[in-house]
Image (cartoon, rainbow, N blue to C red):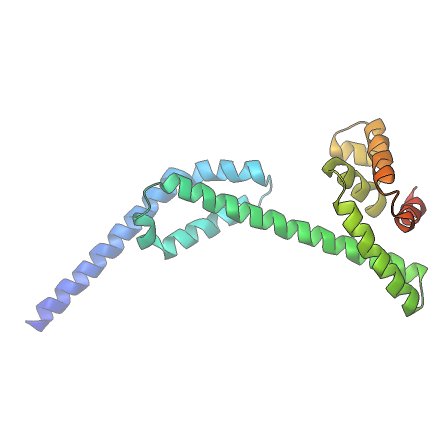
Length: 192
């Protein structure tokens, strides 16, 4: 008798697994392309598929919970949006770390003693904070011209604006940074 009970339990487990697999396939086929398009509007990178695979992997791990979700589309869109935002935040941190690294190299070239480097590092943090407070167009222009060392023409091409607009954004940045004379000095040293 126990053998039959055990076989019935096994059959029930296999049926449940098959139902879960069918449910997952249905969700995947229904939403994958739609969610890929949505993610591309946020990221525009080749990492979109990795993000979607992460989302669907989490769904597969938690398929039982997903079966109870009434608004699957909304749930999936939110999951993809959150993953994309997390990726964008990660990229932002990487850019900031790269800028810090570049600046520290510049500091080392300009200041060979450690006290000067410490003072310069403090100025750098003030500069980063001030630059973060700039309007987005202004900030991107400053980053391209001053930190990446691009010409006004190359920055204009990347930002899809005229070189006159680049000059205008740099003027705005200089005006907004007037309260920080040491930052003005740094920016003036970097002008090509």
